[in-house]
Length: 139
Image 1 (cartoon, one colour):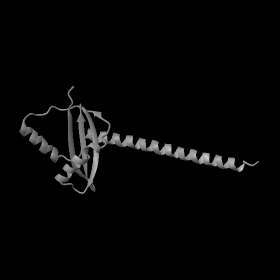
Image 2 (cartoon, one colour; image 1 turned 30 degrees about the vertical axis):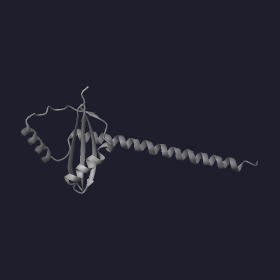
Image 3 (spheres, rainbow, N blue to C red; image 1 turned 90 degrees about the vertical axis):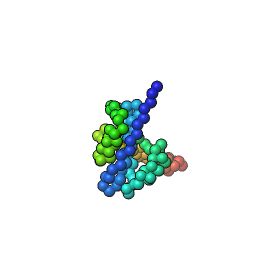
Image 4 (cartoon, rainbow, N blue to C red; image 1 turned 120 degrees about the vertical axis):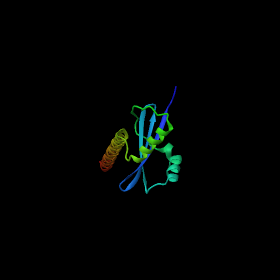
């Protein structure tokens, strides 16, 4: 079974911070993670960040994507790399994957907070019931 994994990091300036978007294509499925760097990172800082934190990044749910054929010509690869550097922003598939991850996290947060509110209501109700029983204990 052949496994192909392709990773790409795009760093761009999004007022007022520098942002990095990690794209990972694993067997035709795209996963994305967005990282805020703050001040403009140097190449060495980016490399250290990738080495130290890549395994801990939380990527979005995989989205099916079509992979393009890669050119074997090294000059063409160099031209394409230069075009990628000139182009700013993220691809629409990446933006969609990031938005999907954001929505999923938002739903999880809402669910957790709802459960916490209900648990607190139950706890207060039980406490009130216990106090009522204690008041009527002697009668």
